[in-house]
Image (cartoon, rainbow, N blue to C red):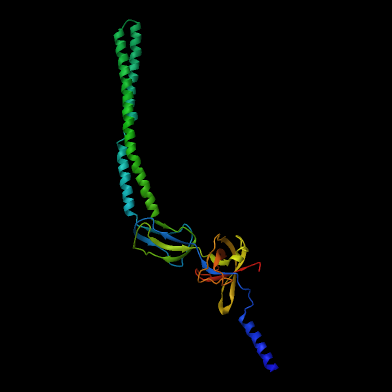
Length: 301
C-alpha cells in the first residue's frame, strides 16, 4: 500500500510538471491591431491606372495610380483661351496717352513762341489766350482718357480674375486625380480595379503600418496602478509546439476609464468585470498579424 501511495504521489507531481511550462502567468491579454486608413478617391472618373495589390508595401507619397483627367484638362484649356481673348481687349493706355502728350508738348512750344511774339508786339494777347485754352483742353483730354482707359482696364481684369480662379480649381482637381499613398504601410484590402469608375469619396484601398503594431490588452483594476505610459513590458504570442515568442513592448496609452471586459479576453482574475484598456507598441518582425491574440507580462514581476 505504501508503495502504491508513493507511486501515485510521484505520478501526480509528474503530471503537474507536464501541465506547466515554467512560464510566469501573464498579467493581461488582448489582440493585436493597427491604425488602418481607408484611402478614398478625391476625383471622379475612370480609373486609368491602379498599380497595387493586397500585401503591397508602400511608402508615403508613392503614386499608385490616377483617374482620367481629360475633361478637366480641356476645361482648363478653354478657360485659358477665354483669358487670352480678354487680354487682347485691354486698351493700350500708353500709346493713346502718348499721342495726347505729344499734342500737349507741341502746344506748349507754340505758347512759348507766342509769348515771345507778344513781347515784341508781333502777336496779340488773344493768340496767347487761345493757346492757353488749347493747352487746358489737351490736359483735360489726357485726364479723361486716362480715367476712361483705367476703368476699362480694371473692368477687363475683373473678368479675368474669376477665370484664373477657375483654372486653379481645375488644376487642383487634376492634382487630386492622382492616387497618392498617404502613409508608409502595407495594403490590407483593395476595393477598386483599373477601368472602373471612381466617384469622389469612393474607397479605393485600406492600408496600415504593421511594422509597428499595437496590442490592445486589458488590465484589472488592481493591476492598472502598475502600468504607466512609456513603460517597457514583455509581449508574448503563440509559437509552434506550444511555445511562446517574446517581444519587447512599450506602453503608449492607458485608458482613463474602466469598461466591461470583452468576452474574448481572459483577465488575470476571471471574476473581475471591469478592466482598463492599454495599448502596447511592438516592433513587428512579420510574425504578428492583425487580430492575433497576445499577452503582456510586466517586467517588474
